[in-house]
Length: 144
Image 1 (spheres, one colour):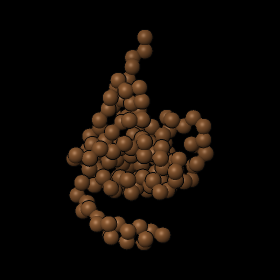
Image 2: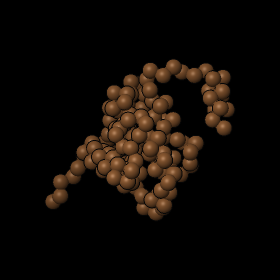
Image 3: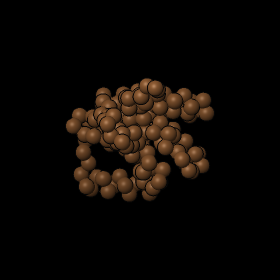
Image 4: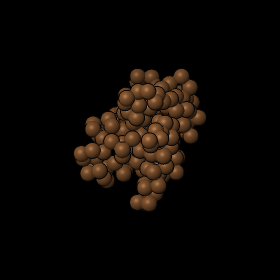
């Protein structure tokens, strides 16, 4: 009987797979904040990879994004091996905040740039000052 892997093992395997394959194809994949911009570029340049059954790619990219968040902001993984949709529901906890990187990757691919992964990861920064509604609107207007 084959040994069942834990989600934690799968996350680390998938994340390393993503980093290795991104690096081999010329994208920076060093778990830095800047590498999340490279993920964005990779998604934009390779939309056909997400046609059809792309669950393993989405899981790998989500694992990479989550691992980058953990390394950047000293977060930790939260998994539930008994959850039948555990790969979709893996979480990153940073301070008291919870993030779902695989779900965010799915939204980014499905809904486009308004679900930018770089902005998502930056928003996880526990040291970032909260923005007032006015400053948020100013920032949003500057992007256009």
